[in-house]
Image (cartoon, rainbow, N blue to C red; front, side):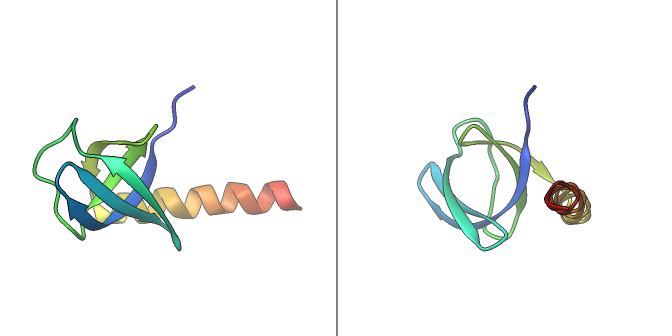
Length: 74
């Protein structure tokens, strides 16, 4: 199973982006996609930005991931 995780782009340097998932930042490659800007929401998979997504979609997916995570802790 493959999983793309929504993240927000916080910095871009060349073909690398720093993206935030909650309060954690990750380095990711921009080699697979064009036209990504700071502030965009993206799907992150295996260290690569694979798609730009709508901010509302990113928030909803994050909310569902958090809900699942909370269920596992109970």
